[in-house]
Every structure is written in structure tokens, then in C-alpha cells.
Length: 407
Image 1 (cartoon, rainbow, N blue to C red):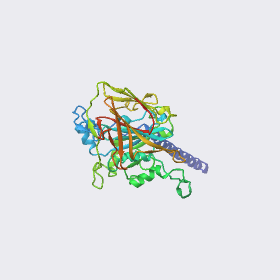
Image 2 (cartoon, rainbow, N blue to C red; image 1 turned 60 degrees about the vertical axis):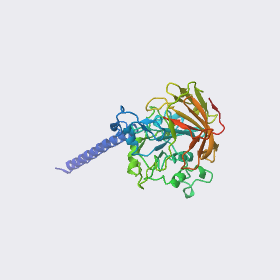
Image 3 (cartoon, one colour; image 1 turned 120 degrees about the vertical axis):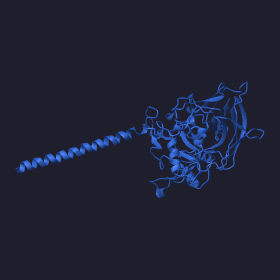
Image 4 (cartoon, rainbow, N blue to C red; image 1 turned 90 degrees about the horizontal axis):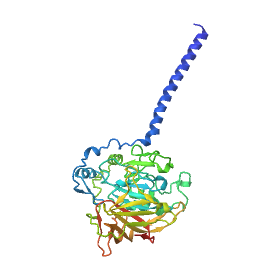
């Protein structure tokens, strides 16, 4: 064989080898890209839920939920008694509506995050036992939401993505300038003080301490393009799996049950009045933000209140059902802010205040009290007696003190 033939054979071998390696790499890349591209569409719990296989929906509902008094089956209770509550920050930006999973919360708090835009704290425990629930969009924490979350026993599963903080990678000393974020609204500092923050702790931060498949970026959740910050979702069954791995089941690694010091509210059965005093409750958080105005309409046949947000029905994206509650509580809170250069607001939910409780077609003037961060907020009527909540969903609207409630 001459030198020219040898050269041609070597050249052919090199080209063939290179082409084979390229095709193999391209094929692997395509598979990886396809998986990652479709990752937001994968619901790790929607198709096969471990909880679903344990539940017989035909069984009688004999067990009281400690959150809101709603009745569930003994099988559901068996599931939730192995867990502790999830308290999740869910946003209410108009571009992110409708939310996922909000209708499955036992209790929901609503307050302004900044600029008149409200945010929710969803307490999930009993009504997510039956199946894995997709929740979102999940957003950043605020100090007053942490104060409410701290009522739900020892180390609840606090689900969020980031929070108000003074961390700055490009600033001297890694800290933002004075006045950028004030100490009283620094959510990260509060979480650190509580011992909740960290890769193995009970605060599930989608930005730093938890990822796929517990939380994902679901860019197609609404079937339309939305801003990147509106795409974070989580899955309750996966959160609970991870919580057990971290030592935060119903009983912690310290041997203490999450509800050792948890205080239940009082509950009563439906007792609608014959002549409802109001069929509509409406209010604004900020006058210049009509897209966040709220209306609740009383539905006598179901003895519940149906929610409208920004002039349209407020529905759960996963079920398509309109949000409803058996109890609507208006809690007036003192508003301050913006308190720093980033526009953060501060709402005083520790202390005392006034409000209204709508239930059974009736309205009750109430007083609320919360002695400290860990104390349960208690609600009393004008005679000083603790109120009873009707068994079922509870919505608590933290409205700035002095705002008008029309009913």
C-alpha cells in the first residue's frame, strides 16, 4: 500500500470517528434538552399519588380537621397525622392568575406585599391529604407572613422562593447599603433567627434549598407566556417526602410533635340565619389598585361566600372551581411604608385590632389579639367571648386599618 493510500485511509478513519462521536453527542444532547425543556410540564404527583391509593371517598366523614373544623374520613386523618402543616407563599399578581392549589388550602391569609399588590399565605394540611396538589406560583416571604406561619406549631413547612433580605454579592461586605432593606422587613434574618433557613431545615426555599422535583419552573402552567418570576410551583406530596427526609414529619428529630403547643380555634356546624344580613362584601386594599379589589358574595344554598378578585371570578386553575369559604374574616392591621428604598411595606399583625367575621349570612364585630410571634391569633366578639368558626374554609383578609368595608 503506497503512502497516499495510507493517508486516505487514516483520513477516512479520523473523519468517520469524529462524525460518530458528533452524532452520539448530538443525540445525547437532544435527549437531555428534551427532558429539561419538558420538565416544567411534569407533575411528579399528578399521575401517581401515594395518597390516592389509601383513600376510599365513600367512607363517612367523621374526623375534624384541626385547622378549620372541616370533616374528613378516618383514612385522610391517618395521612395528615403523619405530617405537619405546609404554609406556602402564593402570589396574586394579576399576570399570574389563576393560582394553582389555592382552593385546597384549609386557611388562607391575604395581605399586601408591596405597591398594593397582594399575596397569600396558604395553610395546607387536611385538604391535601387525599391527593398530591400542585401549588403556585410560589413567591418571596415577608415578615408578617412568617409571623402568621409561626402560629402553626413547631417548625411548619414554610414554602417560599426567596424573601426580603439585605444580601448583595456585588456590595462591599456582601451587604446592601443602609436604607435599602430595613431590619424590620428582613425576612431572611427572621428565618435565620427562627432556625428555619437552611438546606436541611423546614423552610423550603425554591431559590436556595430545594429544587426538582419538589419545586419546578412551570412556564406552561397557564398555557400562555408569563414573566419568569410567575413560574415557580411546588407539589405537596413531594414536599412531604422531603420533609420526612429532613426529619420534619409529624414528630421532629428532637422527639417533639409539631402540634405539642398548637392551639385550635373553636368550630361549630352550619347554622345559617333565615334572613341574611348581606349578600355582598366588598373592599379595596389600595384605592389605586382596582385589579386587587375583592368581592365576596354570599351563596345561601351552600352557606358559603364566593370570591371575586379584580372584578372576575377567582378560580383555582387546577380544578376550575370558584374559590369559596364558609368563613370570611376581615382583620384590620396597621400599615406603614414603604419603609425602605426597595418599597417594602410593613403590616402589624402582632398586638391587637378590630375587624369583622362573616359567616352563616351574618356579620359579627370582632377583636383580634396576638401576643407574640408564636401565639395563636385569637378572635373575640364584642362580649369578649372567643368566636366559633363554621366548619370549613377560612379566609382572613388583612386590610389596612381605616379602609372601608362595604356590606
